[in-house]
Image (cartoon, rainbow, N blue to C red; front, side):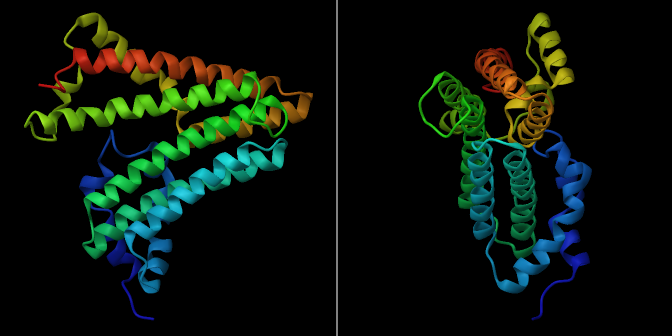
Length: 257
């Protein structure tokens, strides 16, 4: 089967402007996953897969990671972490394949966003079921996991709603780095502190899957589910804090002007 070379896929799919993105590019993508993503693209291009089909596969991998996390034991945590890594790989691949093929689309962006919503929510819900100690949809820890999932979705919705609000008001979709910074000095300091600590990342799929695996190792070593339950409560607290802090940061910045 004929198709592009790896060099062609890298050149078209990973232009400097993409690799230089700070807010839109995950650290794991920059650190290692972009090195591997052209290889599945080489296969996808020869199979004739569309970028949107790759995105659908990304969604299944992410939700599958959440389902795996719901099961107890160390093996399920390993499987969940591997599926989330596959989710990240496909997340890199779909955009690269779209840029190489010239098939970028609003539909692809929409599917990608939905995929991230579903993956984060599935993993947090799976963590809640895992912390409950058995497969069930009833129980305090399950409720905490679902609550954290809902709050994490609200945080993402707050971010996406900035774009919706700007479009509805006739503003362009871009905003400068200066617009991201809160105008109040106290809020600006708080934003810099939050950016340095990166606490919000524990409710995001890549970091959360690693933390679930670490908690599973700790629980296996000492017995019980203490580490998993502490992680769940931490996720719920961070998600609740982020809903409020993110909303305040948006309203205090120039993103809606």
